[in-house]
Amino acid sequence: MGSEAFGGFVRAVREVDTLQNADPTPRGTAPIDPAAARVVGRASVVLLSSHFERYIYAVNAEATRAVNTGGATGTALPEALRLLHSGVSVDDMLKTDWEHRGEKLVAFMRSDAWLWDSHPSGELDHERLVLWMKAPTPRNLVRYYRYWEITNIFEAVTRASHTRTELWLGLDALVRKRNNIAHGDATTEATHGDVRTYRDAALRFCERADKQLSRAVARIIGAARPW
Image 1 (cartoon, rainbow, N blue to C red):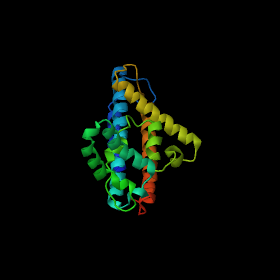
Image 2 (cartoon, rainbow, N blue to C red; image 1 turned 90 degrees about the vertical axis):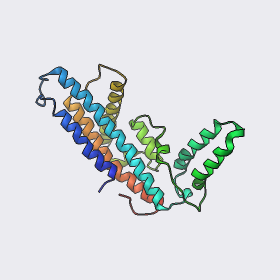
Image 3 (tube, helix red, strand yellow; image 1 turned 45 degrees about the vertical axis):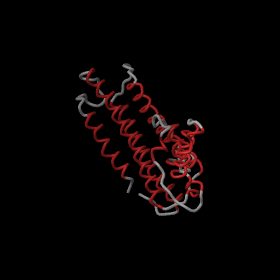
Image 4 (cartoon, rainbow, N blue to C red; image 1 turned 45 degrees about the horizontal axis):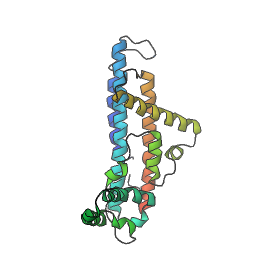
């Protein structure tokens, strides 16, 4: 059993498979229609990367919801997570002149004061936890999961160094190529083999990271695993 986010990601990846099948070229042979094969490869990268990014945001929202319904006190949450959440309000307050900070202080007390008290509970805003993430690069993934007290997500999902390397390189290439294409780089391409490598890396990472995050949330809130 995985998160709703992971189930959605698995279903979404089928679109990439369908798109790949639009290229009639037999696997391992030269493209029958090079122009069509190129377009299919580029489109597959953009679609797969978008679904991967959507999974990260969706599972973040799911984990946050589990915290909010779990009744945990603020001080039970990792300090790094609390600082990240409160930082949005504090930074906004610092941009405001002193004479106009009254409303900001009131808003902070409502949204974040509970995070620094051992008695009341409140609600995390899931969007605040990923505002800093411009793209789900491997480095950003390590940073994100660290907020949930997973020191290095790539080490957590596998003990094999070669598998960690494969996952890191596959996800890095996927996100990097997607960004290149989105910024108008006409030279970026992806073969059937490339897309299959990226697809497998994304599915393997998400399946294993999904379990790690569920365990982390359970430890933090002192309850059963949310999925």
